[in-house]
Length: 324
Image 1 (cartoon, rainbow, N blue to C red):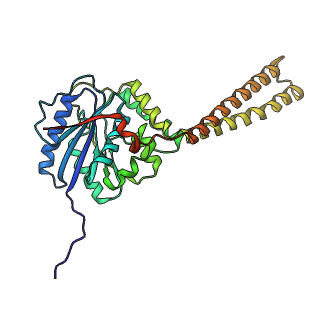
Image 2 (cartoon, one colour):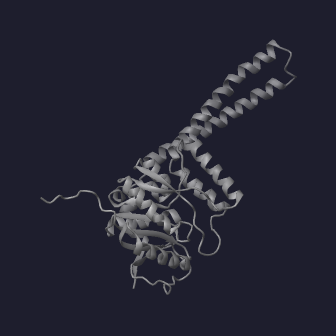
């Protein structure tokens, strides 16, 4: 009697997506390292690596690519890291077939050696997106300080915790759902949190860059943080609105207190009560206007037509090139 095992195979067909803007030397090194790892891997059956050419101003140099399982998704122009990821995911979901899609940076800071950690975790927790959570960072003290501020502000404004970036593995059976989440157009990991798609995290170190310095400067960090917060703009506006209403209620309650101090005590100096009441009334008027604007933002956000990468990605892909 033959016993058929229903245990899922460890070896998977993998597609790697790596956004690239001008850094083609690093991408070639990344592809070479991934292929060397795949040849000895217990988790990778077949491999395809796609560089997402995010409108590079430098012509791609493929001379250093020594493998045939690499392709380039050329976008029509520069969209930025997050939008490039969204378009790459939509293309793979609709045009390709695999078991797992891995998103990573092309500069070496996402260590190719950690791909197997993601795949191992994915095997242990099937049906979940697995993110790489940094156990240590090599950036400057100032960068780390502002990164912590970003995470704190994100938690205060959204009520959510974010402790990971783009480096992740996505089971293909989840990918079709993910590319219909409009928020991945602004911020991939923030959109996953909002969408309630199951996810988990595995701790990894941060790799060393193949070349040059990090392009994530202070301005980039601020823009990245705002993109993450924008994913939950409705929640952010509601929280700020509630905070303003509470402050307005406190200001309104302070007016009779100021009048009472003026009438029933000798604590108030001449003109003090008038200035306090005028200041409180001005604050109430400003609070009302800000609350009205926030309310309109929430209503507009909830009624506008969302951008769905799965439906519109073809308009932004110039061509897909297979490297021979």
